[in-house]
Length: 428
Image 1 (cartoon, rainbow, N blue to C red):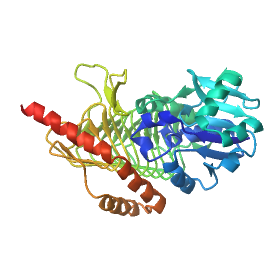
Image 2 (cartoon, rainbow, N blue to C red; image 1 turned 180 degrees about the horizontal axis):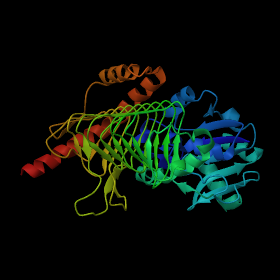
Image 3 (tube, helix red, strand yellow; image 1 turned 30 degrees about the vertical axis):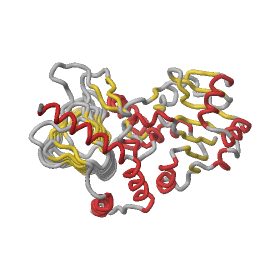
Image 4 (tube, rainbow, N blue to C red; image 1 turned 60 degrees about the horizontal axis):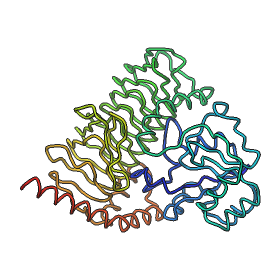
């Protein structure tokens, strides 16, 4: 079987995280959307159709994939998979029939399409959107099962359930407990620890509500409490923290303080005291000591979040913040419910809640929004930060970030102008 994961137009609603990565690289549980999709399909070859701006970084990350390759697309039949599809586990959904041509649908949206060679050639010759629309009406339709991801807060909500589902899939590999460590409250078989992980004395794992999964070479220091379902990624270090249910931590994070029902992608730091709740953070984010976010309105009403230039009601009373890659928050920063912070943004304390929307590469100082610093200096800082973890800022990623800075220039200018108008209205 050949599989090709494609991005559609709605991945823009998953900003700021999808500014710098394809939607299928979003973490939910112990694995990304792509890992779940490929685990279900078990393909022999994999391709991807992504936004042109991301093609080079996807090729860098996955040299074995055929990325935006028309010749590969037309070479034979395949299963075309929507990057926003959170699939059911094998055996949990419908018949998982990927053998005959047809379209798998979730809520009227195409989750996958099983294509014969003639359909694959059609895809290589025509546009993706046109083909999907045609196939949806011409090929047999069937329920795909699973869910379609529309907004980041849905991934936050589903993360705990996905930890539980992923954990049992990986249980034969990860079920391990160091002698006497950690202390377990709840069923002991829900604790899954890679044998290379290190757990200090005075660590408690509460498995009452779901599994606690600790991946390879992770370090959990004394006076930490882990509440399942939660996932601690490879080489992540947790120092005396309260990690509450529904939390997923990517590789090589540094975590302290209190984290509740949040997803933190790789190499990000929240190493100090402070609260992070119902949030989704990108890679290389740094939250300074005493940074807190609100995830609940005082009136317990629905939280609204800026999505694509519009305020969208989440339908949820608890929504925290969404922060893009390489963003940084200084000491004592206070973030409001439903805050959207773009990639490379700099947040400095202002004595109160900061603006709910900060565009990519912008800065906030004393509560005032500005267009931010020079992109070259920002990239130099990013490279320095990455070298501290033994990583390099590749030319492909540097080019992506520079292009993103140019593409979002108008967005920054509008946001600064609108913020100044609001300030003048308040002053008057």
